Image (cartoon, rainbow, N blue to C red; front, side, top):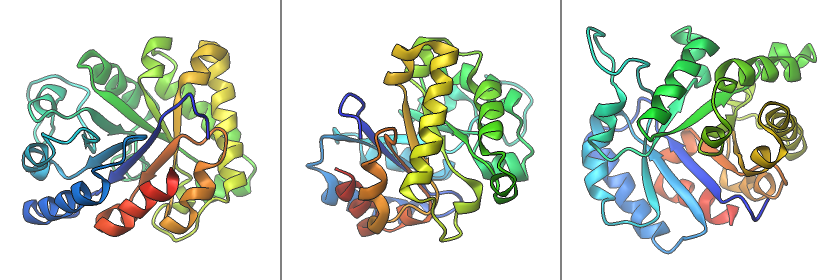
Length: 255
């Protein structure tokens, strides 16, 4: 863990939680995590709960609101889409882009994610841009090739200043929702590779400031070991973020 980079723990609730359930979860987090100051805590509820959760955390100093996706367009005839300006109305600070589930199911490309990231920065939103390899790619020793393609394609057009305000989430696809987790050593190896690539693209000074978080079956039991790795700057938590105590324990164990 690098003391110069503040840890960021984000909960991606995916397509779970009604408005009432979302409020119950976030109100529990307020009680559990109200005194935590050394970690940036982000909750990413479904779109339908953004307004209610935004109001619930309005007075908190340490829990911020994120969205799970947004359009690359700012307005227009794009049925079913949500634009940056709509997210800003609810005081959204972060937006997840290029999650592996959207890459797989909605066929999102690096080029599309790059457009979304640029639009997010133009709206002063901090994108959480996801990259990661499948099990087949890892077994074929293609992890670094895949990561380089995704990082260059999704982030290469940003400026160094924008990269510092971007969160990169390394999430090995084979570890998402499977109960399998990359070992701390595997996570560190991938994070170090990504940081080295950022150094080539944007310079070492920028790379040292950029935050890279790990996503993939993060639990209270493995959070501490993962966060101790020098290039791991936080976690993007899926299923374990849906229960107050579990997510709170991940945050507390990371400190």
